[in-house]
Length: 466
Image (cartoon, rainbow, N blue to C red):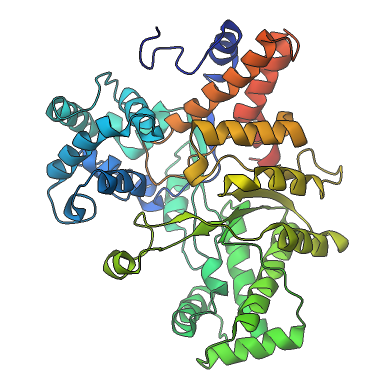
């Protein structure tokens, strides 16, 4: 019987062990999609205690705590930091077979070097040891990134953001690149005229552009797109239920914009047409600058109206949705491809039923100009765990080229989430090692080990051009 999370954790063959320890383990980290607060990097935040860096904003943990019967005041409420941590420590033993159990102990081991199991009996000692370390300069935000061999991160940023913290990190000479990602979702949310118009007013100030007609909106967004590019941005990202690919005319879109700008509620058809037009405009901007566009598809958000009214969005009340995505994806990419305006693209699905769909869809629009131009993105959100990663890797292997895959990301708000890259590398090496042991791929460590290194790091480095 193996020990819990020993050095060969998740590695079930000698070949897997060799691939991981000899090739993948020590590769640097390119975290090309995350939600780290840029101000915490720019200001090199020193976290007050373990709760502040580990539990604040973590809806994965909040969901588990609620399921364990923990009152909301210990999740998002006004309980003390240590009381919140105690409730998490009580919850952790109940998370066996949930990825949180693995992640929790991986994150205690790195960067803290704490090898104890977290439970009510060990909570105080672990909290005090980790907090003491967090109160030393060695464990500032930037130094944690250094410890974890992070080479580059891409945060997620709105077009109106001033990027001052990215600029500060660069001017400070921080050797880990901290680059913005263009996330313009709010510029197409016309289903709520009041919030949309409030956003447009902010965009006017950021772009120093008066926005009275649709052409003004595009001009303002182009100014911000240029500004992002000047500050190192090379990726966009869109969080959508499904792709929007309705037919529209320029006249229709200008009329729709005038309606919503005057505060009128749009009918569903107009909403779909406007979103479709905006996605085309964004895709063209990205293609002109050689950016990579990302689409995160399939989240059914804010399911609990009561808790949304109480806490707002992104508090752990989202789930997998079952939206139709094949036809609109095909229509959207085909429109761009016909005009030779389809840039490098990564698709992420949240519903595992869509794995094979996405794996085959990206294959429709590879054109030989760029290796792996169209990417099936890593297991995302509810799928960034062992089973979800394996299913994504197997679908991609069967229907595309695993060898060109750009690998893992954290998609996290936490500086302690970098062990997810290690988790992924172990799973990848275990799959490849099993195939070697079974005689399904050659027993050639130079060949297979190079593939493991490429997926862990080299492919992303080449693909994004960092």
